Image (cartoon, helix red, strand yellow):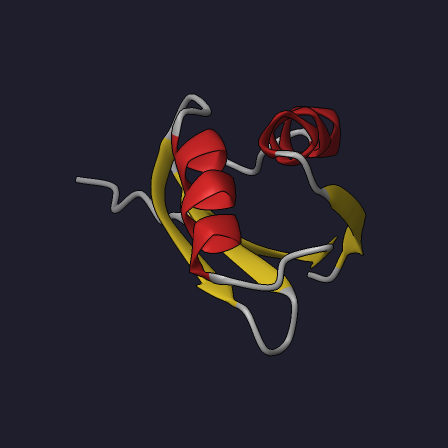
Length: 76
């Protein structure tokens, strides 16, 4: 039996300033296929996404854009 490991990626998101921002970005990122968890660090301006497999950065960028914010870069 092979254990499947989740992929964890952290992205820098610009423009988030409040809990509404957190909810909007979380909602859009959570809708991406394979996403298991989204954690937002408002102070650091980061979104950490746990997913079944690594997500294409274009998909993450589109989801963040749909929420009304900008993906600054992939952190790791």
